[in-house]
Image (cartoon, rainbow, N blue to C red; front, side):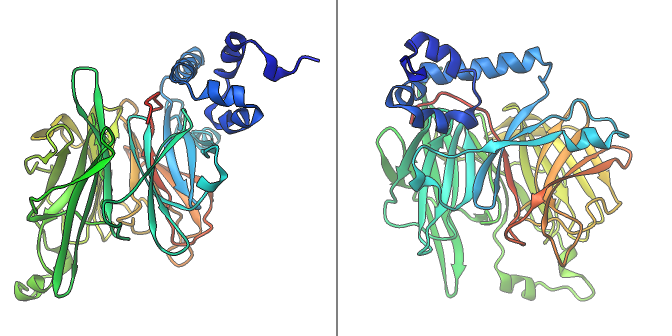
Length: 408
């Protein structure tokens, strides 16, 4: 009797490429033949092309995919703000959908994932083991490939990472990882910067120690292969006490802040780039990208008095220019609770003048619901419930995701 696994390769390829990426695990378990087929670069490229063609047929060009970390798992989400009407709550609920959990072929990889960094369809996953040690795994969910990154010496629980690529030629990319640790453990400062090269499978130490500070709470975003962060002038805690001004509230004090880029081609940090505002000590500043073309920045004042979003006109490692205020979310307490510095991830739809901010629900004392806030002009604000949080104070971490057939 002929089995489905006995389909000719061309026919199997035609059928399997029309299945969603969340079905690939089951497909690869079916037989060795299909496991091999679905890991080929040609298969992945065809599958991505099929998904894009189907989206256009259904007029879903405004859909974009996102990766969300929740409950120590990686989920694929679809976000579509195109059809939202201000008086249609049902449409609001359907605008953000969890389309499936991304898992690899190997059950051993189904461990707790605390952070994910995305670049060019690749995911850099930070995995915490039971003994509090850290593992780094690079993963292409579409190809089903994983790559364990061994440390040069050891990893630290407060390490921060960036995933990017340098250009070897007009069409050839060299993928790299930046790891840095910059903390103060009295009486010493620990500062380590090193870069991992996929091509040589090796780490290289960066000797130049910077004078600025990227907080370990700041999650950089990848744009055109480079990574951008919100950074601040290095000011030690005791310096605030020395410079204390009578009658001034420390939380309202401005601190020199800027945008910083790591250029993965030159393997250097760029110039300090200006922000369109000057944040205060405990304000939240978080970054997002718009379809690998522009950078968006959200500024949220710690006392919930004001929030705004700006979008770049021009963005390069050593130059940036900003548009006028893109979305003044206003002086009303839109979110009804303070946004957390570690959780204020967001997306922007330029055409609709809408933004989606991912955080917790309304309750400060019992923040058990993961929530997406869709906000816009004229006081528009709607909420989408993303489900109950297993860990009360673990926030949903979200980043954009563009599938690719990059081999690792």
